Each structure stands twice: as structure tokens, then as C-alpha cells.
Image (cartoon, rainbow, N blue to C red):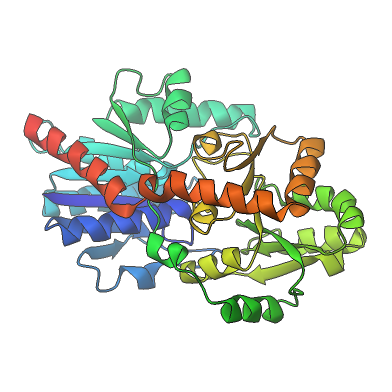
Length: 389
């Protein structure tokens, strides 16, 4: 098959890593794959180097941006349509809100006889209860309209299907869940103790510290402020506990100021931006993953931690409950500070419990999040759709 994938930008992120794995494995299976994306703007880093030598072509449309920009959006649409007319794909698979709307519209506009089968990947939802009501209404309306141009939806969690249909998006269209694949070998590798000790030394973390790691952009709704608030209580009870923030973002200085004002500078460490192949070391050098994001499709950092045999504490949002439970970690009510403090305290003081939960998590996610498992599912969707043609 000739397959086009379209994503808004190739920053360091779960949807982007998922898409690159899909493109790489589809190309390895003999399909002709083309990836179309916008520029990687912002402090979150870029993944363009990961597209080199992977067996597929990459095109950059410089006008494609995450923000609403009518002129740039129109130019992007025209360029997407022109590329599709030249490539004549069998499948167009879009990812993220902006690329999803413009890419599906461009593919659909080619007409019944020429148009490819159109799939939209739902990694997260553009609408949520923490957003302005007017903007929510706009995004839901746009997604409902774009659903009319869609033949099939592929989601990263069952929760994405439920929430989309609940607001009338694609209610009569087929949905398939394909859990977001992780390059597992790097997480499953038992990293030598000296490497983990060197990582701790680099970030001034004592060897006897219990490290609570958070892997997320330093941005709104990612939960860092709630974690800082919980540390005000926990740091007094457990002075050897260290909180490690992995990632970068626009709110880095703001969060550090909060930490300084709370007198917690000695308990927090910031790694800054790490490349994907460094994340396993950061997790394995830590003891507990704490993820307090208020909106995710299914945060990749949860199964990543489990692949490293680390327990996960997460807010009960979107697809989190599909991997986090009492046997793999602790699932808590969003914004419930008392529950967060209780869950962290329970795991900080009990290494045996941490080890048991970590082992259970590994057993749960190892097969479910394997790259070939995801791509097998996606490829079957493609084959069914092209057979219908």
C-alpha cells in the first residue's frame, strides 16, 4: 500500500514517537510510506533526526502550525491536497487536531473516485473540561465535521472512543484501539548500576534517596503544580525523598520559583530536555513514577515506567485506568491532594510493595505496548479498508 501519515509537528512527544514507530515498521513491511509534518517549533525539542534512514520519505510544510492561523492553515490545506494528488495514496492516516482536520479535508476533497481511505489517529482530545467553553464548542464542532470525512478512527485507549462518541464525534463510524507502541528494548534493558549511579550523581541525587520521577512537558495541566504542593507535606515526613522533573517547557521557571518559595530546592531536580533514548535511564534511576496530568489519551510514560518495573501513581483521567490499578500502582482522583500524598507516602516507605507493583506492571504492558502489536492492528485496519475499495 501507499500510505501517507500527517502530523502537525515532530516535537518530543507521545503522539510523535507513536507515529514514527508506525511509519518505520510499515516501511519495513514493504509499504510505501510518506510522512508529512510541520516544523518543530518551541522548547520541546525535535524528532527529525529519527526519520533519517528509516525507509520512508518525510515532507515538511512550513505553514503547518498548532495554533489557529487562517492564512497558514489555508496554505497548508492547498499544499496537502497538491501532495496527495501527486502521490495518489491508498491510505491517509492523520494525527493531532490541526493535521487531522486539514489532512482529512484535503484527502476527502479529491472526490469519491480518487480519494484514499481516511483514518484519523486519536492520541488525545482537543476538547476538555479545563478549557474555555466557547473553545471547547468550536473544537467539538470541527471534530464532528471532520468525522464525516473519516472512514475509520484508531485510538490509543478505549477511553478515547467513549469520550469521542459521547459528544457526537463519529458515532456511526468504526473505532479501533491500538495501544501506543513503545520501543521496548531500551526500557527492558537492565541498565547497569554504575550508569544509574552516574545519572544520580550528575543530578546531585544521593544513592539512598527515594526518587519520584515525573516525565512530562513543563506546561499547563501536566500536574507539576499539584506534585509540588504534595511535596510540601511529604518532604517533612520523608527528608530523603527527591522529586525529579524530566522535560522542558514554558513553565520551567515558574515551577522552580514555586519550589524555591516553598523552601523545597533541596528536594527537587530538573533534568531539562532529554532525548527519548535517555528516558529509560531516568526512570530506572528512580523508584516511583508520579504522573498528575489532567488530560491525556493514555500517557506513554505510564507503560514506560512499567516496562522498567517501576510502579506508577496517576490521576484517573482518560485511558490511565487501562494500565494503572491496585496491582500496578495507585490510581487517584484528579486534583485530590490528600490521595496523592497518601499514595506517595505508601510507596516511599515500602520498597517491597514498589517491587511487587513494578513486576506486575511489566507483565501487564510488555505485550500490549509492543511495536508489532500496534502495527499489526493498524495494518489490519488498512487492509480491511482497501479491500472494501
